[in-house]
Image 1: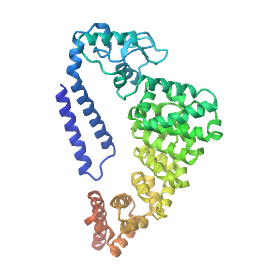
Image 2 (image 1 turned 90 degrees about the horizontal axis):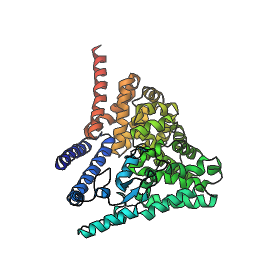
Image 3 (image 1 turned 60 degrees about the vertical axis):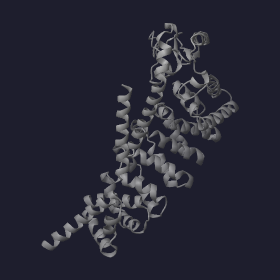
Image 4 (image 1 turned 135 degrees about the vertical axis):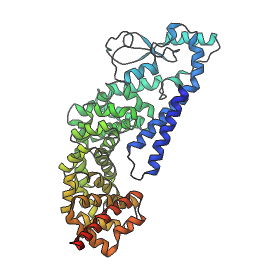
Length: 445
């Protein structure tokens, strides 16, 4: 069974990598899928290594030493709020899936804190020793992220301080920022309880004072959110916590430049999930992102552009971005030679929206795009420009003359049809065919 699953995962990975390598116009979702497949292969490998040992330990062990969820010998027994004992990794998985009941009793949990069952652990340890079996060290087996009990206790104490005096809030926020940056295990701890993120955000959510009077506290909390969002298992939880996106939007508008940059980076990271793209777009976050893009602070531009690009992959957010004035801001920046690479990528994504095509035709974008193709040394920029021009060519015949004049004077499009990327060649040839067909029809008439 395990071997079959491994073969299926390897075939899927080969297919995904082949699509990424062979297709210049590959979807970014393919990279996420490839990464998830690699993680699944890794987990399968680890399970295969430990399966024979687990079988030997589990077959003859007393029932009270087995986890009710895994039916295997417990390595790190913990007590749930209802008094039932489980192996930590398996009850954590149950809780992370959103369950808030005891698996055995189905009672609703008053809290999700897991307390080590030291008595059962000692009994298991003695049982293993009497049979010559080695139980993994607690620090190594605390959970799949490598968190120790001391780490967890320290984490909970820091969250408690977020409800205390201002100096304690500041100290705790600063330490959580540093720990979640350095230690992936601390990022994972936030997914163990639905209350953890609201506790982190309490100083900002209790009133405006958190951001307007104490910008350093706001910066540390927003940056901690960014660090949390890097952890794949946290993305959905973070975005769906009601206070998160409004506080990120407030940070975009009123924080220090580092806070605003990190808020944009957090939205970019969270938007890796399609469900989050929709949620963030509906929340109105594109408008403050576009405003910050227009403001043009150099240190914020890349993160802001990346966030807007990711959000606009889904169609409904393209309409929101256009409504919020993205096109004018982007075109102005491109025409002034500011962050052309990132902004052309956004423009290429937006170009599938009909209103964008109309506004591009009226804004003088066509000569600008042709000039970039002519002068740029970046293949990706040329590819994005010709893709946008191809869309304009299909929808706005009034711009054919500008393209014909460019081709007659510089041969810009035909050069790209010969020497561009595979996608650029397709788009350039598509434009040339339409222009030539129009010329032939004119001569026939």
